[in-house]
Length: 480
Image (cartoon, rainbow, N blue to C red; front, side, top):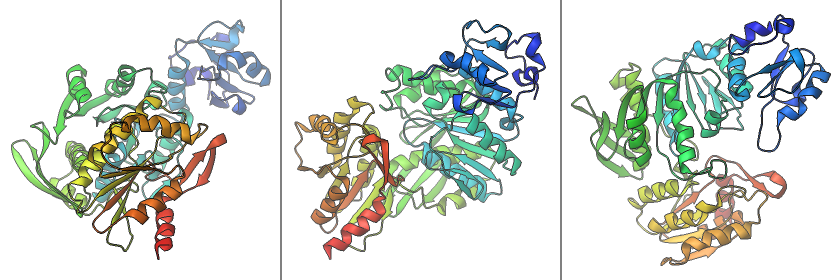
C-alpha cells in the first residue's frame, strides 16, 4: 500500500516518500523489515524514538515520531504516535471496524459476563458474532487464545479483519482502560457503549481514580449510544457528562431499564425487567445480584439492537454463565465450592454479599492479591472479604516478582480489627486443601481471584499450570 494512501490525510509526509510502497506497519523494533513504516511510541520502559535512526538503517521506509529527530524526509511528524498508529492499522486492514456492528463494554467489574451474555443472545437469534474479551476471543464458535483484555493495536485490527472475512455481523468486546489510553482500538466506532461500574483497580498504571475514570470515559466519545449503570457513583457522573444519546440501567432504582422483584437462589435468579412502562419476567440459571445487573445491561443492549424480547428471554434462560464467574465446582459433598475472578475490593464484596444470601452454613472466602500491582487495594480487599464472610483464608494470587509473604503482610493490615477467624496459608494449593478440610455441611467456599485462569505467575514471571478445578479435585481425594 502506498504511504499516502495509508496515512489517509491523518498526517503529512514529504513528497519524496509519498509514493513509497509500505510492506508492513509496526511499533515493534523486532518486526521492522525493508519497506516498513515504523511508529516511535514511548512506553513505560522503552521509547521508540531512541531507535528511529536504527530502524531506517534496518530498512524502514519511514518513521513516525512526535518531535524532530533530524532524519530529514524520512520522518513523519505527528502529535500522538499511538493515535496515528491506531488509525494506520485500521487502514492497513481496509477498515474492518466499518464492516461490522461494534458493541463495547467498559468498567472495572462485569465486562466479561455482560459481553458473553450479549454474544450468546445475538448468536442464539441468528447473528454471527465475534467476541473480544479477558478469557478468550471468539469468532462464532471458534475460540482464540488471548493475552490481553484489549489486544495490542495491530493484533486487534488483524482480529477484526479475520472476523469480517469470516462473516461476523457483530463484534462484542470488553474495552479496557489500557486499550483506550493506548488507542489499541484504532478507528473503531461503537453502536452502543456500556458502562458497568468503576472501583479501585489498575492504580499501578493510572495515577489516581480520576485518571482511571477519564480513561474509561474515552469510550463514550466514540459511540452512538451510551448505556450507563446509575447504581454506580461514577456512572451517575458519566450520565451527566456524555454528549451522545444516553440511557440508564439499574437494579436499585427506576431507570430506562431496571430490574425489580429480584429473587436470588443458589440455582439461579429471577427478576422483572422494567422498561417503557412494562415489566417482563426474566429467569436465569446464573446466581448473584451483581449478575442481575450484568444481565439487565446485556438484555438492554439486545433490545436496542431490535432483538425480539421473547427471543432474548428464551436465550437468557438457557445460558449457564461464564467460566470462572460465580462458577460452582462439583464436589459431590455436602458443602459447595465456587470459583470467581473477583480480584478487586468491590468484586469481592459483590460475590460474597450475593452468595451470603443462600449460604446455609458458613461462608468461607479464600483470596490473595497480585504482585507488581496496586498495593493500596490489598488491605481494602481484606476488609471487603471480612464484611460478609464467616471465615477467611489469606493466601497468594499471582505474586509475580514480589515476595508472597510481603503481599500477605499488606493484606493483613485490613484485618487488624477483624472479628471473624482467619488463617494464613501462603501456598495457594495448600490453602485450597485447607479450605476443603475445614468445610462443614452447608458451608460455601468462595475461591476468589483466579476465576478462568489456569496458571499462576511466580518469581521471574514464570507461568505454572494451576487450575483450581483440578486442585479442588486433588484436595477432595485427600479427604477420602
